[in-house]
Length: 274
Ligand code: KIV
Figure 1 (cartoon, rainbow, N blue to C red):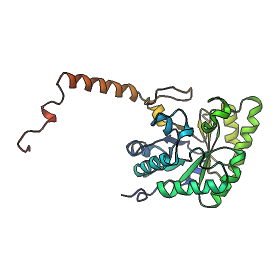
Figure 2: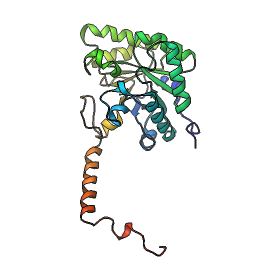
Figure 3: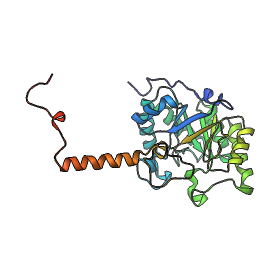
Figure 4: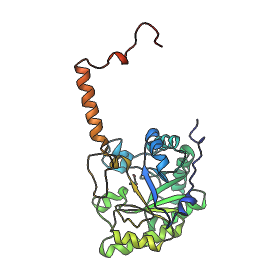
């Protein structure tokens, strides 16, 4: 089955229409089997550029390439039948001007079968968002702590405290007015996220934001306890798969060394078995 053979049942307008209704459930995924497991429970599956840190061991998202996003985007799309698949635009593929952004976003949409792209930035990306939307590319925006700007921020710090709140509010209004169908609010004070959610027309999707957001997103490997290099305060671990994997590997290693694996039920005889 080709990447585009399955239809994505949820569309960006349907996600947008969820503003103020049942909270949107969003998770990241990077591979076909994980995407298939979470798909029935999600409204949005995001192929985040966090893939670089989570699966490829990169120090930040800045090193993530277009080829990586295309490969993981295709893999996820193959596993999803229900949710909207959104693919992150990698650093350097859209910031220069709207034409550069269109070429990159069109490639992502055409080569992965995703239903939308996500890009980071507020007021300064509004023209680009409007340009993409006018040309048939649904855009999820991402403001607050935008990890691709980690060097400008001087670390993964809370954004929008005190005097900076107004700038984040302006970012939210700008991306909403530019035509984004939703916006991720990352690592901003809860009261600010609640205020933004009440004031803008599109759904807000919180990560380290507020329970009042129109939806929530987490990095799948964080919430499964698979990525354990560090745990941001906003992550809740719903499973301990990292520990389970380590225990399983230890049990396998000890059985291989003791020659108790493979056992008779795992091996083949000369004769065909019934
Ligand atoms: O790359 C990513 O996984 C993200 C989410 C954390 C929102 O952008």
